[in-house]
Length: 282
Image 1 (cartoon, rainbow, N blue to C red):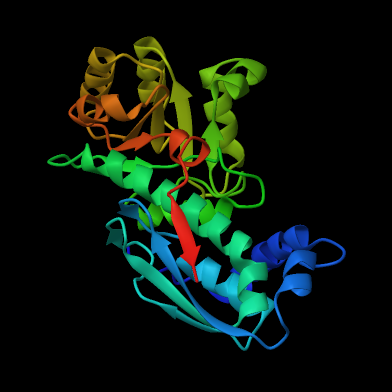
Image 2 (cartoon, rainbow, N blue to C red):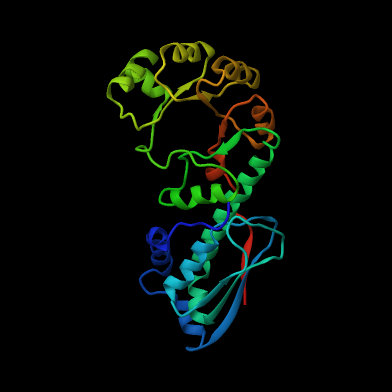
């Protein structure tokens, strides 16, 4: 995935809120007191470890929102692999503005690059298979669009962005509705023909019931052992899209992909990715 095509108009409210949070009621009092007014400087945003970058476009937006006169030159596009020591961005202009926007820019770029890097590691474990890695809705509140974009930059795919994107019938829905039969009947009777339907199962007898009843497009194979996943994929035999989820640690991805599942979803991509070490150097 190359540089994001999301317009600044979509990203701006998120970045503006982060700047307001960091500046507080009085702004950057340290910089205002110690940096002489009118001081110009040039700063470089550098990678301090190897990874896949994401959030550079958002970091650029943070600098430009705080001071539109700053010149921000992205040296590599989002979605690019980088080595330790790579210069990712150069910022020139008012030194006070650069310092005041620094933390917000680094927070976004480091966090999102960490997600892209972890996603790329998951994707690498699926080499030689048709399995795709996808994220979940286990994202940081308010940052979902950026974090899901970072998954794309790492070579992964996106699951639902919101509850309104598709019908996903989980185990609690099944329990509350009275079983697999009633939930699938309700979907057939009431859902729009434009809406895809996914249903979660964690046993092969449940899968058999779903296959017999029909009404789903995707089946979520939840918390199954690898041998059971392989049997489930064979049972489906291409009639539904298959998604494996639950306990999808990096170390397990290769063996799960080898079962033939279409997708592996992992919340860890967004809720447990370590921040990539980036730094801004004057």
